Image (cartoon, rainbow, N blue to C red; front, side, top):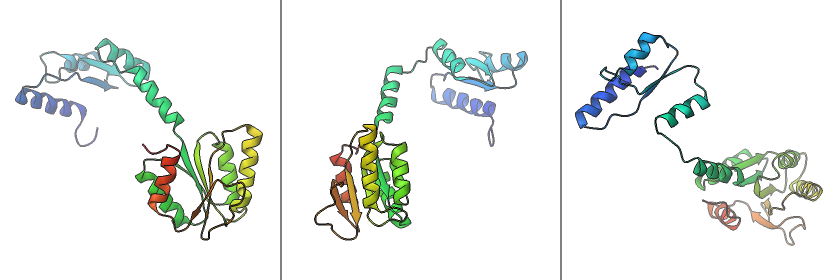
Length: 211
């Protein structure tokens, strides 16, 4: 490794442990230099490194998992799988607008709320993105005036995709500089520009996206 190689780092760790009376850490060395003399030097219990194991590169997942299990280091697999499932099921906000500054603002709000966001820059792209990620969306926000296809046209096409594929229906917000009254039938709600952080926070809470 640059700046400080692995052996130097281990020496520093061992010196720190001895100085502070800490229990020695279990250190596994992973190296491509797997000659017998090197392995013996690194794993010598009385040597400067005192590694508990030496693994040869390339080291795959199964090999590392077996070594950790052998050393009594086990992860909570069930918890890890549950966390993975939660991540898979976590919904995203889908935002379509042709103004880059509005997209940046939306991304910033989503980041502050720890919510993932899908983005499209015109109506046609919005329909295409939705088709690819129809099961990932918790809410859709469509600008009313976009090139290639307006938000109103995109909403109708997205509704067709939902109906034809039996995808889960999601709330669709019409984002506009003017308030629509009445709201076009394919939309769930309206959001008037310029919108604020509290508006997006309200949407995420309404659909249980905020952590």
